[in-house]
Amino acid sequence: MVDDCFGHPRLAAIHDPLDPDRGDLDAYVRMAEEAGARRVLDIGCGTGVFALVLAGRGIDVVAVDPAQASIDVARAKPGGERVRWLCGDATALPPLRVDLATMTANVAQAIVEPTMWRRTLRGAHEALRPGGHLVFETRDPARRAWEEWTPENTCRVTEIPGVGTVESWAQVTEVSLPLVTFRWTYVFAADGQVLTSDSTLRFRERDEVERDLVTHGYVVDDVRDAPDRPGREFVFLARRP
Image (tube, rainbow, N blue to C red; front, side, top):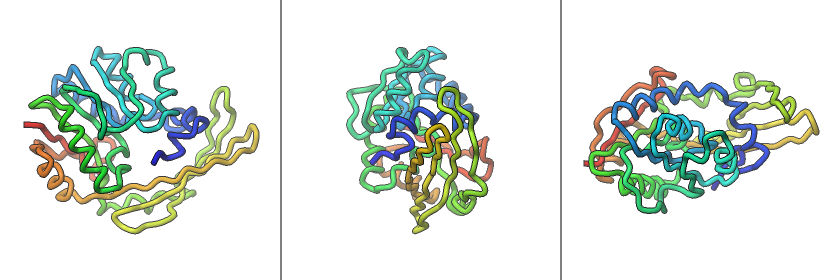
């Protein structure tokens, strides 16, 4: 399943202007540098922001995402030819040997089905060279981030060149832990079109994630705080022995 915010062509085209601050990626760039990564697999690459940052640094990047509309946006960006773009997921990758695999932002939590999560961990493990690392983040369930996902807290009006004014907001529609479902609404002032996108995230406990990683052959080297959301997220750094 692909959320419409990534899979609908009109929404994929405005994803970056609606989320322009990607300071959260700075920590991943630093971890790529720490690992001395020359080959990276970016799982759930979306519109390619992180993949293109890495490619701009001379890193060989394979970027995969199930949303064709997002892949199309990513490929059309300046420097897009430097990245190998794949429409799909980590469960069916071509043969790879990468130094680092990443799942930035909501990617790990968006894999809500347990079987798909296990298959993703296996796919990333197979793509890593021995000694290679998997890095991803997930919100701490104890912080109950979804309680802030209200129209009052999330509503914004964005002027997008070539598109016009877009008003957007989020609203939680169901909490059935560990799953939280919410809906983004987008109103295009130019023609009055209203589009919605429903998403579900799984809030995993830290010990659950560590067990999953160990079960699938990883060594957990570190669990860090997210610099952009201190005390709110876990950043897992796991290694294929």
